[in-house]
Image (cartoon, rainbow, N blue to C red; front, side, top):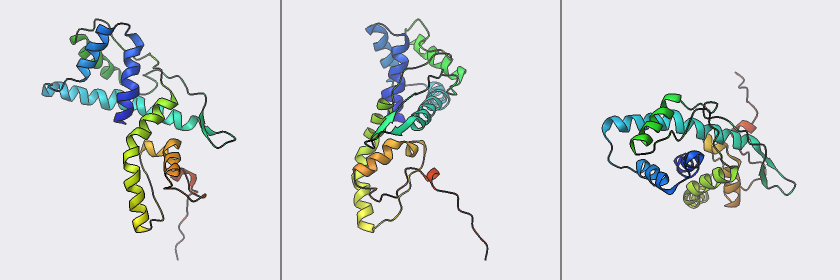
Amino acid sequence: MLNIIERVLLPAILMKRCDDEETAIKYRNELNKSSRLAGDKAVWQRIVSTFFIPVVQTWLTDVAKSATRNERGELEYKNLPSRTLAECGADSTAIADFNSFMNKAGIDTDLILSDDVLEYSATDINDSIIDALQDGIAPLGRFIAAYDIDIVTLSGKISEMPCVAQLLKEEKLLFHESCKDTLREFSEYVWEED
């Protein structure tokens, strides 16, 4: 999630209204501040949890739902919906707090509004996910091989992304044709009492 926030969401916010290098530098400096007051850290945590994360979760859901396979079996993404930040579940107070920090950093205008639609692509989202997972795949493969593992389950929103299953298949961690990309593909089992 952090990778997507840093590589897709934050640049999309900057590109929405920033048209000069001076503003871009102020924006990056404010985001990279390491010394923050305790109260500021709490506000930033709220910005992340009620603004950034809901937007990224909505994007992940939209990308996962728009995925189809073409005749060659490759993933394609069509008809990604355009949603405002409010429609993505971003909290308007957190957006105002974000803009307040940017105003204090010398950016005179609000960079982002609740009714803004941010540009993103399935490729950017998938590349961020794969980059974040790539280094952990080889050790996982060695573990699976060493202990003759039959079932591997992944959880969380990222695990629902078709690119994750594709990555595991490309790395030969999922090699059985009956592998399911998500647990949602399994039918519900009804336990019978004896």
